[in-house]
Image (cartoon, rainbow, N blue to C red; front, side):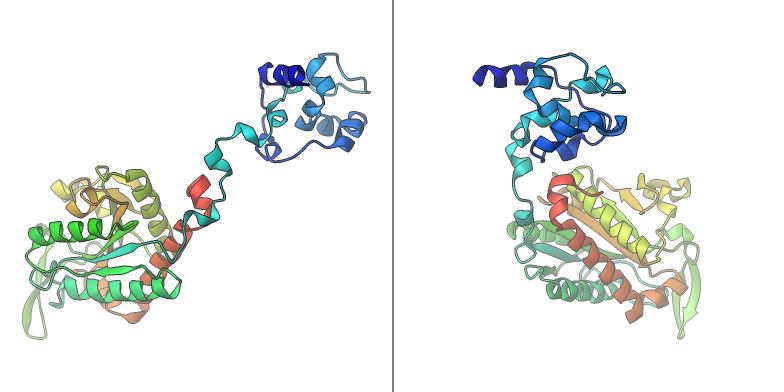
Amino acid sequence: MIAAMAAMVLLPIEVSDAGWLSDLFKGPSKQAKSAKQAKSPKQAKSPKQAKSPKHVASRKPVTSAKPAASPKRRNVKLAALGPVALPPAALKPVAAACDPSKLRIVLDVGHTAESEGAISARNVSEFVFNLRLAKLIEQKLKAEGFTETRLLLTEGKARRSLFKRVAAANDLRADLFLSIHHDSVPNKFLEDWEFEGKKSHFSDRFSGYSVFVSRNNPDFKTSLSFAELIGKEMKAQGLDYAKQYSQPIMGRHQRPLLNKETGVYRYDELIVLRKTQMPAVLLEAGSIINRDEELKMNSPERREIISSGVTAAVKEFCEPRWAMLGPL
């Protein structure tokens, strides 16, 4: 018995063009070994024939009306080894890989009350937009069972506040970090206008959301995967991404576009993306310097669409299949 098993392991392993993965998890079938030789050539090519010791030890052709299998498919021994050939981690139940009640998500409210970020076409600070949207995302995530979601509000001037929020996220030992922002444009694209008797600026040239990741994040691969899910959900909600970041006219603000379908860009220098010790993504939910899009971003309907998209992305990230296969 031991000698026979050793012979099986030492023989060369070949895999047919399709169907081999499912055989890893199937046991041998006695009926298949006795009956499939008399069936059609397509059925005769099944890798299950390789499980009979007689087929392993003998290289004589099977007697039938047609050849049972080509030499290429004759030695399909992978299934004979059984699931023990897989790494133990691959056999570990994946359902426990992401418990929504334990997944710690930090929702970073971009900018601060002292450093408000961009100013919209109608003179509303970006910080106001960021806070409203982040609160709604927090509410939806907690309602879906992600009870460890934390809203991160920081104080102070711009650069100092960036390091504060990174330190806070790291101290919380977050599993995911999502920074919420609303977009503007470089000054050279701004035009003057008046709104309610006050001077302001606008640019109706560009619109759309965008998602950013940093290659310098310690877990860039997971950051990118989460960013892809967010972009996919934004697109599924009927939103378009901001395409200007891939154009030379943006000058030093131009960024590498990683996925032209989902609007995911690479922005390696962003402190909140590269200094965090967990997967990190920054979402520019839309342009508030564009007069039409500002009105949409200010509406409950658009906040509902974006918050639902982010929530769906987190839920998909946490599905059991993610732990073993990654995003499809």
